[in-house]
Length: 426
Ligand code: NAD
Image (cartoon, rainbow, N blue to C red; front, side):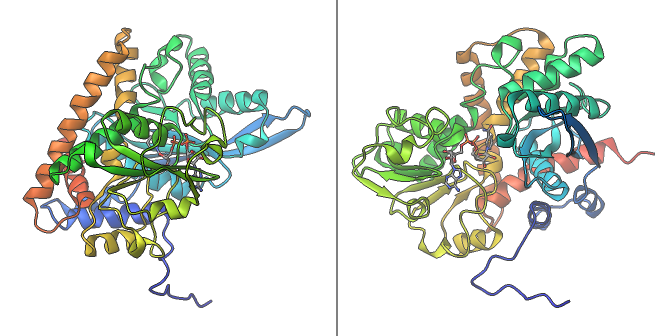
């Protein structure tokens, strides 16, 4: 069989795991790190595949396939989302679990990287079927998860209710209540205030700091945001509060623009009211793709992966890109932005508020003491500034690195150090 090499006008096809390994190699080339540790980090510690029998409402049984990838736990228990999506693959879970390792290390929180998923379309499941699937998944994974082993969280297709079922099933089997087995739960059973807004909040905080680094005043900044869900809407509203001019936002159905600035609280998020973004009465309507190419100071992709590609990288007019979504920039687009000297502030820093408040939630669960929203937001601000300072330090210290490489250098240095001091066993 012959394969066609990708042309200059195509992004080479890459899996999440291939992208993650490529990024690891680039970071490792800048620092003095044991090649054995780098090689080790290219592989997950383990990947668990489970078959999940679920009784459909019709009475028939269907078997779903689930995965849980454990990338690295040198710095603490595995941590990462659990997604329900028809496109879930083992390779995707491995790649995403690697990103979680770096994200936790960049934030200097004591977790490693994990990720899991079930090959299922949650829209095709009734609520009861979804509950049965989740409870049986918790049982199938019981030996490899736990508050000190691996702590799942919501991701695509899962939410606070999914986490509540998962926690209940695990606790029932263990014979005692274990709120710390998952994060992203409803506050009434040990979830944290501020968890939902956290990745959007951190994206806004990091945008503010990046602007400040380049001598720009947030109050004189125009921003366009693709995706108006949990990350996008919260980032938009906080940036609006900080004084930025949010001129365009989009959901899956389209984008709206007001050159004088949108009232971001008046536009309902996709979660609040699907379709409300494109249906909003704004001066201009445009497509999702066109939003990314607007002449604004900052563009924030906060919807899905692989939206900044070789096809549009040369047309981007923004001075900065801040990644609210996970993996919105392809490797080739990243190289084009580096050539064009457009700073790309990476996902593993910008949206890391989500896992950081998950860590706060875990602390609250372990200690059996809830924090107020004010405490959560103050601690998040401190953690984000600390991580920003570390990444900025690496960006300044190393010649000719991108912000992504600087973040990877910070993360890899910490993970490699943990491996060195723990040593290889036996
Ligand atoms: P969400 O489902 O709440 O919102 C997604 C938004 O993107 C919606 O407005 C939707 O309409 C829009 N959208 C969907 N498909 C689109 C498309 N093809 N083009 C343009 N817009 C589209 O999701 P979210 O939780 O905000 O997650 C968004 C991104 O942020 C994902 O990449 C996710 O992995 C990442 N992320 C989420 C969290 C979290 O805790 N929620 C944390 C870190 C990173």
